[in-house]
Amino acid sequence: MALIPVVPPNFGGVLVASGDAARRDQIISTLHTDRWPVVAAEGGADALGKLETTECDLLLLDRCLPDLDPDEFIGMVKRMYPGVEVVELGSPGAKTSGVLRSLQNVAVIPVVSDAEVVERRQMEQPAVELVEPLPGMVGNGPAMQRVYRMVRLVAPRNTTVLVTGPTGSGKELVARALHELSARAQKPFVPINCAAIPEALLESELFGFSKGAFTGAVQSRAGRIQSAQGGTLFLDEIGDLPLGLQSKLLRFLERGELQRLGSSEMFEVDVRVVAATNAELMEKVKRGEFREDLYFRLSVFPIELPALAEHISDVAELAMHVLNDLAGSTKVTLSASALRELESYNWPGNVRELKHVVERALILADGCSVIGPEHVHWCGRHRFGAKAVQRELWNGTY
Image (cartoon, rainbow, N blue to C red):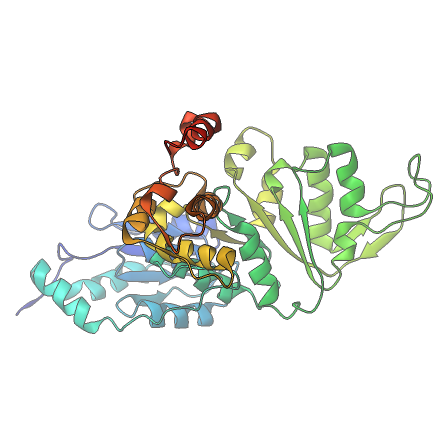
């Protein structure tokens, strides 16, 4: 089989990873993008995510990464994606004239059929070792395995993490896992829901207040940030943080110090910050509802949780886990047809909705040892309204 110095049709493409946007654009500009696909990544975490979802045979790595140590990152790529060749491009400011030569070297490969390529990759690809689920989380599908890997990678560090995902997908579980798997596990984990506290009270809740700061402030009090000293502060629904407080939070994140309401004294605080949102923060930035500098300060290491519909293969394991927790010592199981009913639903409410459906099914089964499809058939029927279901239950037609 002859070797030819051209890119074959099955060449997966190029991934360019750099934390420097200008540098990244400079590298990409040297590539003949009409000849092969080119994907860009803003950092190590982003690059791992792109490798998970796209076919790339070559990684062009600028060692200027904002989140991961380059050598550690290269080791991860070689373990997880042994078929990807990694080419380092040197320090920022170095010339990129060698990029095309790297591509030409990679391109000098045999031209083989697609079937041969698939067979060869299957033979060469080692079995991927499953990552243990995070504390309190269930499911081993590819989407969740990626989440587990990312969390375990960043947990030992002090890096600020932004957890995104739809409502009910388990963002607080991820935040707690980040805390429990870190060196801060024996220190406080302090959650605060930025959407649940009135704006007028939120500043004092977060930053605390001094005696006499307002009517009723008869003594000074530390805020939630200071009470997390040495531990982890979890800012849930960060997208709902009022603009006026965003600048104050940014100042704390940058300097590690805060000022209580009504006081000029500065307090140094050592906390690891994990934020979460179900909102598209960049859309809020474009609308002027969220500070861009705060967004980039929070999203040093983003972790995106999938909707349950994106890992439907985990539904059976999740449902049985919930059922065993609810049933306690009573032995109850789900029939195969009931599981098929659960797996055929798209779960707009995600894991939280699944838990509620299983709990209702257990109640409707009324002591039966096997939960059937008639007990879980309620899922998806809430669109008719709770009254309609109650009427069926009352009439015995459920």
